[in-house]
Each structure stands twice: as structure tokens, then as C-alpha cells.
Amino acid sequence: QVQLVESGGGLVQPGGSLRLSCAASGSIFSIYAMGWYRQAPGKQRELVARITSGGSTKYADSVKGRFTISRDNAKNTVYLQMDSLKPEDTAVYYCNVDGSHLDGRDFGSWGQGTQVTVSS
Image 1 (cartoon, rainbow, N blue to C red):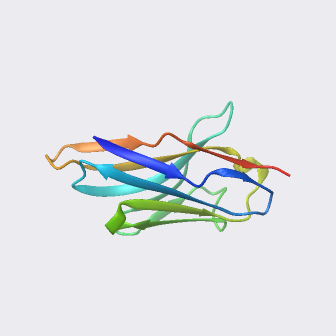
Image 2: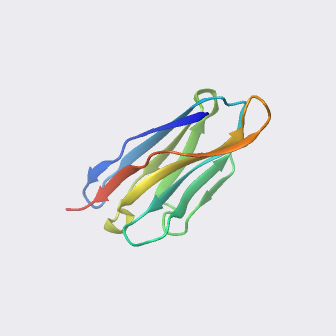
């Protein structure tokens, strides 16, 4: 079993900043990639940003230059620094982790989601 604990969501004014964190724990041998997805009301879940174990990153076009993903491999934790937030960034943000268990089986886990609301 792998548990993901997210934190850092909340209400912020347009132009403001938030930092999301997601810590993975449990039966983890290695983590291949960690990422953040979001889902706004009435819309499909979409990739926001993703980072591999080697540090390669991928961002949605809508957040490039405003959001920064990083990870602490020693703590199995991924962060999402969100700057210059816009109302259209309002969504539930989900952490996703892909890796392998101690017995060699691959896993893909999702966090419970954290609400980010950008509004004046």
C-alpha cells in the first residue's frame, strides 16, 4: 500500500501564490515519477506538471512560467509552487505517484485532492 498526503491548498487572490506538497509513504521501493493533476467543475482531469526521478519536468502550456514542480527524493515528496495564480487555476489538485513496491510490482497512486480557489 502507498499513501499520499497532500497539503497546501486554499483560497488566494488573483496574482497570489500557493505551494502544494505531497508526501508518499508505505511499501515503496522506488518512485519513477511524481506529478500534479487538476480537475475543475465540469471538466476532465488534466496534467498540470510532472517530474521524473532524474529531474525531467513537463508542464501544461497554461501554467508554464508560473508554476514550478520540484521533488525531494529522500523524503518521497513532491512540491508545486504556484505563482501568478489566475481564477482559471481554480480546481481540485491531485497528486500522482508512479513507482514500484518492495516486491517489484509497479504501482500508481492518487492523493485525495486539495482545493485551490483563486478569487477576489
